[in-house]
Image 1 (cartoon, rainbow, N blue to C red):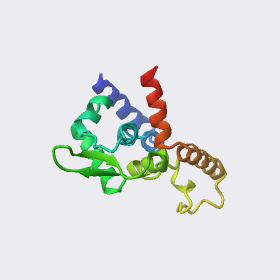
Image 2: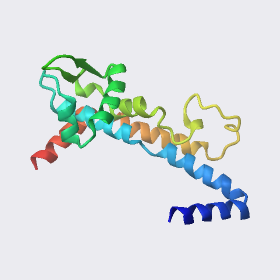
Image 3: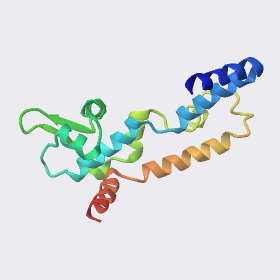
Image 4: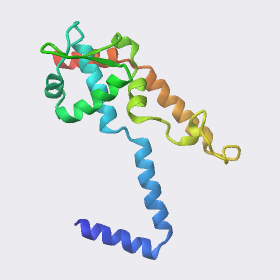
Length: 172
């Protein structure tokens, strides 16, 4: 099946040269508009730590089991969160991880920007977007409005909100 699919793409690229451009643009668009598993799992980790924020450290294996994430992948995510100062690690038998601040002080946007980088739909929508066609681009307004809407949503939801929603689902 994969060989057939590759053959179709090869034929399309040979017959229609602009198809190469379309394939490349489609791949770029998919990269820009999707949140990776790292971003999604980082939110799950932060929410889990918020739900179990009782002054004691939470072990990676416990988070991994509850969230159905491999420990190895989880350690990579937590390392990024730790380096940014979102969580702190405690060594020893009673060690693990805990949030460095109250869950209300973290937004979904903060975590996604840490893990994903920019969450702008296109590079020129950002304030420092470097595009020589911004003055004449008829779609720039749409991208900037979309970016503002995305920011409004992700910056309006805290980790405490996610934890409360998740807690409600567990109790139901």
